[in-house]
Length: 371
Image 1 (cartoon, rainbow, N blue to C red):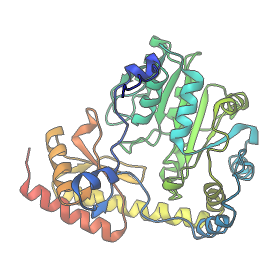
Image 2: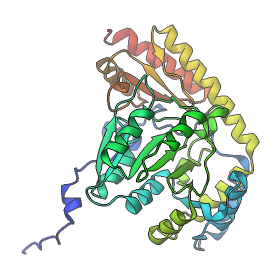
Image 3: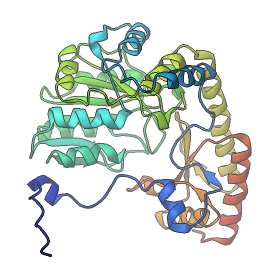
């Protein structure tokens, strides 16, 4: 029987590499034929979800046969109240990744440029490529996003988008609200700042800048995946100008944010005691990792996130250590580009998980390569 030819793909799809931003821990388990002992590489919360969120999500299961509210009305109303903005400034998506895709498809045409840090969150790069955009990168400076370099590159390239995570992933470092307000004031007129604040709950009080919600050059992204512990529910939101939200509504998947996730997110917002307890527990864990690094003759980068980047001294040692930890069934990740690829990135786990990691890293360093 003659096999039919596939209909032609678009030129953009034909030219894309066959890659995805991340290899999931589940794939590592399948490849290795055994489960992981410690899953502390994906910046998931080890502290679960709010009891109020759990109750709300379980109750919502009774109505799972119903479609979700495509407007996420109740959740948007609560987010607008908390952030003191209009509901027209808020859009809900199935996680920040979904929102990154909306931004790219709304603002990037084939051949146009987006600017980001070299080695920053790769999903943004992925969506720029799917739109036929060009990526221009600036290396980290002193292990932080180089705000001046990013702004200058955006001006030099005529970039449509500038992506900035603050606090940053994968470094964990951050800039103050004053730094960010200065950067926003210097944005080239054609450039939109995409400010990813996924780790905002863990950051110092002076981390988040005051931004006019109707500023058409700024989009702020937030998530329920980190401090709220709902990564698997896939829900996040953006705050931006009302005309930008209206544009997103033209192309978003109308029923893309499921009913259970909406209910859980709304309940979690109303349980600030739980979120505060997670933030405090993570701060304790970050300090434990920093102390462990010093004990082992290493250093760690300052972090305002739920993970710590431990400086192994070189790319070769970081890679060997990550592989050796995986052989011990411990899943961590490492940044993908210099200068940060001399580090391994470790999520703050529960106390027992942190103890197991300390034991595994000590063992790996005692038997592995040294600088």
